Length: 271
Image (cartoon, rainbow, N blue to C red; front, side, top):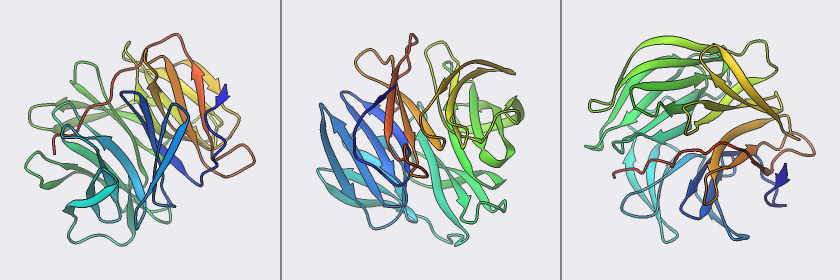
């Protein structure tokens, strides 16, 4: 396993690979990082930045503070501001679906109470709540046929699976895909590979697991215990990029591991 950069962050999260560039955020420092051919750049926002996704019109969309922002040419412009914000929460993990909607969850700042929720910013740029009673909304992914939606509320130590209606942007029929209570730490961010298997980071568990329904297929040990998220990158999408948090000597770095399985490309936001 290789360290991608010697730059040490506080809470690296939300990695995505777009064309030839690795992007990720440092949530608590409010930073968006990009690495391209050893060139490391940083954009600083005025508040937490919890997730980023590529935009079809160019640049990125970021969830930060109480809104969604367009990041383009080092400029930051508000796309949508959330009204009636619950001050007990902040944004956390988010991704766009195949139609270009932005799904993002919130988490309880004390990480104790189910005050969070899962939202979707629809194509008409209106925010809709799709799930509530969440404590730490985290990893999201969709099945390769877009008929299933996978979701993590970290303290439950479970990955849930819902039926997914792509055209309507709706989820239903929640079931447990896998219970990871027997592993140390809690499930955090995740991604899906070209074979339809999920790769999930274990925060406090020092590893990434490749899972399917009810089974762990593979695990990769990480030098840092606080593993936050994963994505596939490089030209063949066979490098797993792993973000970690600065909770110990080896935390707060980006790691990479070549794997024999190809990932899938990140969906682009329509906005």
